[in-house]
Amino acid sequence: MERTFLMIKPDGVQRNLIGPIVARLENKGFKIVGAKLMQVSEDLAKTHYGEHADKPFFGELVDFITSGPVFAMVLEGDNIIKTARLVVGATNPQEAAPGTIRGDFGLTVGKNIIHGSDSLESADREINLFFEESELVDYSLINKDWIY
Ligand code: PCG
Image 1: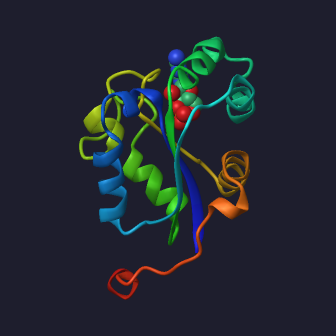
Image 2: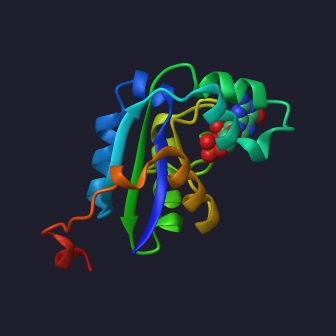
């Protein structure tokens, strides 16, 4: 089963959106295999967002993601990298469809509530960056036969 990395950003945590967002992910049928509230260090932020290092907003991005705790998650599901991005919505919340997390909760690209991996390679990289293997739990959900 495919895995992805999702992270509720400091704006989502401060706005008490952990519960509503996790509810949407669970309701969709995704399985949580790892989750933690954590403070992102400057080093981790720069590594995680390395591909944006030469963008003009890089400094702002690093300052923002380290400005307060984030809620990091690893989720599992069929074709989850693509489907989780559909649930998350477009990067710019002003272009994200209603019904998506960013479409319902966000207004600006700099404070877009949640991050989701965009490919198999970035999901692997981000999961390994944020989680130790021992933090990921191997279990099965009793509802799985009603989803698959
Ligand atoms: P994310 O976390 O999915 O991946 C890269 C992030 O860069 C993106 O979400 C946005 O939050 C952020 N981003 C993209 N464009 C801009 C911008 O113009 N300004 C700021 N501050 N952030 C941006």
